[in-house]
Amino acid sequence: MNILLISGSTREGSLNKSLLDAAAEEAHNLSHKTEHLSHQLASFPLYHSDLEEDAAVQNQLSLLRQQIEAADVILISSPEYNGFHTPHLHNVFTWASRRAAGKSHSVLEGKVVGLLAAAPGPFGGVRMLPRLSSFAADHGCWVHPRYVAVGNMASKTDGNGQVTCAETLQKLRNLIDQICKMAAPSQVAEPA
Ligand SMILES: Cc1cc2nc3c(=O)[nH]c(=O)nc-3n(C[C@H](O)[C@H](O)[C@H](O)COP(=O)(O)O)c2cc1C
Image (cartoon, rainbow, N blue to C red; front, side, top):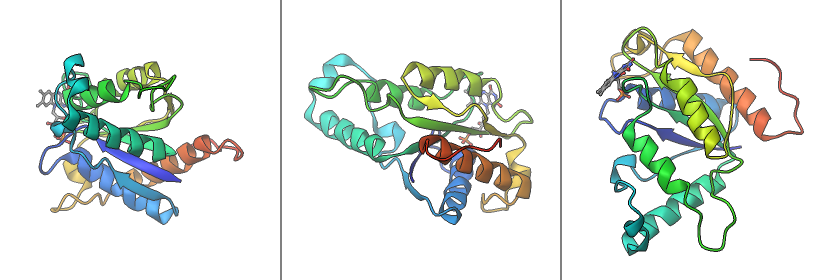
């Protein structure tokens, strides 16, 4: 399976980027391929319909569409900002929701999506995750109902931000295994 990784945080030293890196490693161990969203989310201008005519933005959007189209599965890890996902993540969904010329649906429709969140506090983004799930579903995505929410993230990583917590790594493995089965309906998914 091809897994597209999207971090809702573009921050240097982001906890969510660390969690996605760990997910990528687990995915490779399960023989899946991964790709990070090559454009930093921050490089997308805030959505404005006039910008749809801008050649540079069109190129950027075209690459985004190609990356989403090529993915069997999308894994998103987002910080919780006041109970919601980040503005950058919201913005990229808005751009991706726009149909390419001649297409009857956006590239997001029918995509299988798994959700992760990491936070320095104890709750790990649990208020945000169901909201992000509903938001992604409103874009036509099939969202896996189990999330991986990692609270107290600093205690689960080494000094370099690498996830060392065996339980967290196991949860990532379970979600990746489940979600790839969800994206390949010929395989029967076991409960996580
Ligand atoms: C504007 C803002 C709002 C935040 N709101 C929450 C929140 O609702 N819940 C939470 O657990 N952490 C909250 N935080 C703390 C983030 O979880 C923390 O900054 C985290 O490290 C961001 O993720 P990142 O490391 O991947 O960038 C907030 C941080 C900011 C800057």
